Each structure stands twice: as structure tokens, then as C-alpha cells.
View 1 (cartoon, rainbow, N blue to C red):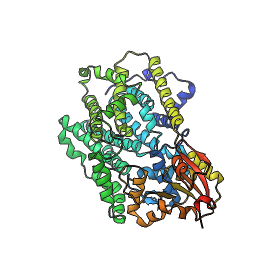
View 2: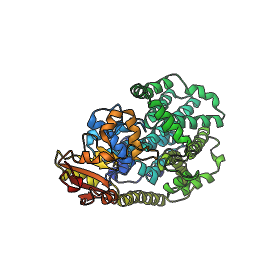
View 3: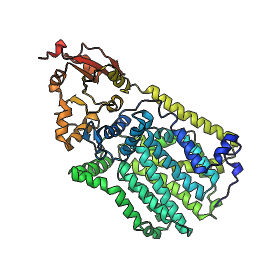
View 4: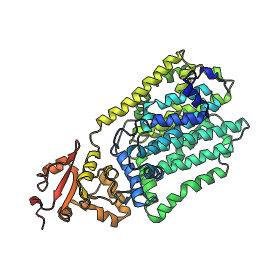
Length: 523
């Protein structure tokens, strides 16, 4: 194991205040600073659509309904993803209220796990100095920074995947060094179970695949039986299985919908959204890790013979490369691709970049810190740019409804479902959604999601999913009804085109519909 001179690390020569902070245990200080940085801009932008609005909305429904077992979308059972993200977010919303940064706290937690995964391995088996630079680089990598402030399942499962790989690898290296290893192995199994509860089978498939190929290619396959030490799989089953069994008992079609349709068919078929070419993730990873990407080349150019005296270091470096390759290849196979799927690759990639920056360059410390500052500016500027570019948030319409509507004046959605509306209006009941529900919904989108959810509870679906021909019955049932609809739909509706928008964004409008409106011809 390499030794480092503390005076050469990036935390030296700071002010007395920082020195007092450094007198605390380093993991505590590092964790606090990382948390504050990752949350610094988490409150400045509204929830993005559809993902953030959808998943924060599901968590909010858990809070307002009191049912924390079955995730629901507009009151309908929603099984696109497992419940762990919703549980964590519901706890956050219960503690801090329905605001943006609270909705994103679970993703920040996942980012902290991912950061800790690389930090544990590098600090213990490579060097203290590189572990610190790893954290600085990771915290200022735009994809990682943005993912930590995006309220969906991707960063949470990336954190558990990364920590499962790191703890299992640490157990293997400790076993080879005749050190204690069983606690790390149990931690690896636990994180795999929580990864399964975060986003499904990838929580166990990806860590298992990375570790399997690492041991196989390193000619250490005889260690594989050790990793199945019986308390580990038992812990995995105890943590991961109960929710899935309960849902199958309550909804007989759950296993088929969740595992066959949402996992295997999405992976193998091309009929889903977000179709991208095979090389998509290479471009995403290269661009979203700027300005740090070039230092991976510096790591590549390091003479591999210089570390042959340290078998653990050689094995760990091969783990990082395999970690990147296995996960990138796995997600490159299906046609449907999303940027967030690349997040589990970032910790090992940054670990290699950090080693390249420290060992493979002659840059002054001042220049390195200038790069950190530049990367930090890019991160914050990217969030601000995204905030300015978001013109479809429903927040302004939701707030206008809350400010202007009387308590007995309901809100309905016409020909749309805005995922963020329940969150921002703090509604306590599902919304009526008027659309063409008698049609078959094939294309991914809000209508298919609600139609699929209604199949698990047809009686609830009949109450909230109303066909377009029955629209007038809904609008005539109350003296005043508020509605959010596409602006084009209102403009082209002979019954509603005379209404003026109370609030609007670039695509949708909020209108107040009195039942006395002549064109409605209410009885």
C-alpha cells in the first residue's frame, strides 16, 4: 500500500477555521462538505417533467394517502419501479414539506453512496491523496452533480450498485490479505438488496456481473464460493423479497408486469421511447465528465509496470476498467437509452481520472485547483441553464389554482396529465383526467402509464379516468371547475375557446370554467 505525505494533499495550507474542521474525523468532514455542495442548487429550479414530477408525485401520494406499501400514480397502483426511492422521498417530504430540494434528497443520498464507494477503495488500497482528489473531481463532474439533484431512481440505484461493488471488492482484497472480510461482504449483499428495491434487477445483476468478470479474468474464480457465504444471500432475501411477495399477493399480474414487461421486454424490444445508437453512452460519458475527461488519457499512459510490486493495486485498477466496460456494454445493448443510466460508471471513471491527474501529470497544485473551480462553475452554470430552459413546468399554474380557487372548486385535467400538479397543489385526492381512454394506448407516455395503472384497480380507474364524451357531465356538475389543458386544445374547443387563461406556460393553460358558460349548455 502506498504512503502519502499529508502536506502534499489538496486539504493542506487552509485557514484556521478549516484546520479546526479538519480536526474532526475526515469522513465526517468530507461527507458534510460533499452534502452541502451537492445540495447547493437543488432548490432553484422547479421539478422537471416528466420524471421528477412523476416520481416526486408518487412519493407525495404516499404522504397524503398514508399508504406507504403500494406506490400510486393519481390514486392508481403504479409499478414501473420498486418503492425505495418513494419511501425515502416520502420521509423527506414528511419532514421538510413538499418542496423541490426535499424531493431531491434521496438522489443526493445516492450520490453520497456513490462517492463513498470509490473513496473507501482508493483510500484503503491506493492512497489517501488520490482518494481526496477523487472526491474533488467527482463532486465537480457535471453528470454526477446534476444526477444528485434530479429526483428519479437513477442516482439512488447507482449509489447502491457502486457501494455493492466496492464493499464486495474490498472483501475480496481483504480475504487475500488475510484480513477481516465478512462484514464488507454482508454490506455488499445488503446494498445489492437495496439496489433491487431501488430500480429492480439491475441492483443485483450489475454488481454481480462486475465482480464475476473481475474474478474470472483475474484467474481468481475459486474465490467465488466464498462470496456466497450463507448469511449474505440470506440477508439479501430478507431485505429484498417481502415487498415483491406482498405486491404479487395483492395484485396477481404484478410479477408479469414488473419483471417481464418492465424489465425483459424493455431491455430486448425496440418499441419504447428514447431510442439511441449503440455508441450513445460513450458520447454521454465523454461530454458530461468534462473538463476531467482528458485526464483519463494521462492514466492510460502511466507505465503499468510501476505498480507490479503491489498486487492489490493492480487488481483494483482492473476492477475499475471492468466496472466501466461491463455496465456501459450492458446499457448499450437495448435500443432505449437514457443519460441517467450512465451514472454507475462515473465513480470508477473518476477514480482512474484522479490517479491520472495525480500520477500522470506535472501540474502545479494551483493549476489543479483552478480545474476544480472551472468544473464547479460548469456544474452550477449547467443547472442555471436548465432552469432557464424549462418552459413547461406546471408550478405557476398550480400556484395560481391554489391562490384563486375556492375550496369547493375542483381541478380537472383535459387531454393531459401533468405529473407535477399534485405535488405543487398539495391536493389530497386524485385528479379527474379527461381523455380518450376508450382507445388502446401503446406509445410510452402519461396516457399509457395511467391506463396501465388502472388495470390493477379498474374501479379506481373508472372514477378518475373519464372519456372525452363525458366531459360536459364533469364540467356541469359544479358551479365552477378549473382545468389545465393544452393551449391548442382550448383554442380549438367550441365549448371552451372563449375562456381566457388564468395562468399558462409555453404549452398549457389554466382556465376557470363556470357551469353557466353558454357554450357548455349545462341543464
